[in-house]
Image (cartoon, rainbow, N blue to C red; front, top):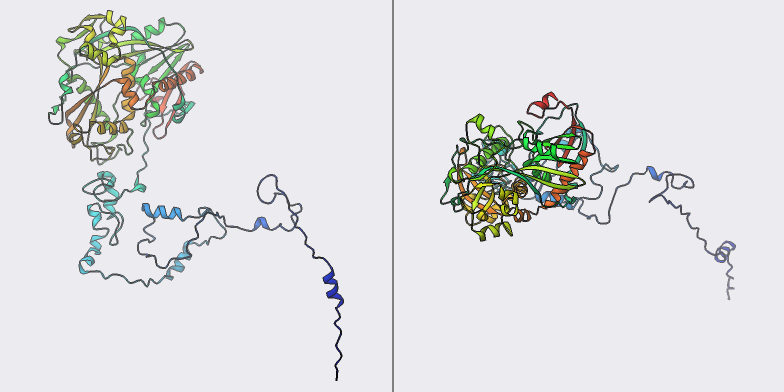
Length: 619
């Protein structure tokens, strides 16, 4: 029997679907010409109305995809009481930190302190096997030995103690100047504690009065681009007398140390007045035509290298018509010699170590400076005399003591735009040298022969004029190479003879402002050479006894180039400040270096401001 085949008929619905072409609707794209993401207006954004309120987590394609949790890492070395303060942990944490992890996020789980207490019972079981503790080690975990056993000797963190030993040792290491009993930071034991630096807030050299007004604020990073060329100065007059330098101090070594006489300057009168107290300077200012600026050489040098200064200092400025007077404040600290001012860890004021605080070190260094400058000179019978006596001879009559060796050399510079700078410079001593030595030191010829006025002003000299070199004397001092504030300088007694270059590099780093300032003073004074002495304490704990270890002779211009200092930049700084003051009205101003920032501020002060110590209280 044959079964008839059923005919296959297509359903109407399926047939219609096969005949209709596929359809695809493109979504509408809304452009935002103002920036990325959806526009601020909501027109046409019915689909995206709620997107702006949806929280999101910031991300970056460069984020590391780490593990959700690492159960194999030991948890005993990182507890709540011991944060990630080691260098390695900080570095690893920064490398694995995701973008936006430091910002608030809606996905972050927030909890309160009360919830922390509620969850205190939660803990993770560490199934890793632990090493058995021996009997000797159990003794170290006794409460009498809290902290690291190695920390008592300067050791670092260990599994049997904290990172810093007991609290007393940890808190007092800045007072003792070391992380251990045998050395300082990162030396014989212990690691460098970067986060343990003390925030040093220094006091200003003068208290700013309530009625002072800020006229200008100058950031030091803006001064490095200034440049101004000044022609050679003109000698106006020279006064006084000089003693000859004793060359025996050039041959001193650490093995032939010479004792520094503590009273070498006690029998002399040392005078270094400010510009307004110098009758010769004021007389030259009265005779000058046009605009004139008068100052002493130390004030000019401080302004020219102000960008290198760290400690606070101030200068009183008086503008009267076309005259500007730059004065040191009477009774201030301008003439004190700083110690390790530019070191990474300069000396700090504290109550436990009164020997090595900045104030005591400055007083000690200033006294050493004066005694050394007198001891290195020969007897008065070999004086280099000038026709005009010193303008400060009256001070010597009041004290009954002779004036200290020194020639006052008044010079004038043309700053352009009808501005003249008249300054009193100082030559501390002279040294005898043959014609070849004098020519080599000065470049072509010595400064005396270059200046016809200077040569004509000589009254008597024991050696020919062409063999005389003009000298400025300066002195560096070492207090304690192991103390806080030493700046990592090498021990002079062990390194000065064989590695004098390394010692000078360290001094340029730690006392850059002082050395540049000395060099500028020597250049402006027209000195042929600068003599630098090295004086150290005989006992690091006794600041009253010192010894001369060595002497160094440098040419000021070449020494400035070795320290990468441009004299033209210094002239640019001085000219910029002078232009600022000439743009203001007559009156008194005070220029103050900020004690904690690389900023210099110029204030307008009342006309009755005296400028003496204690005047800031009355201002």
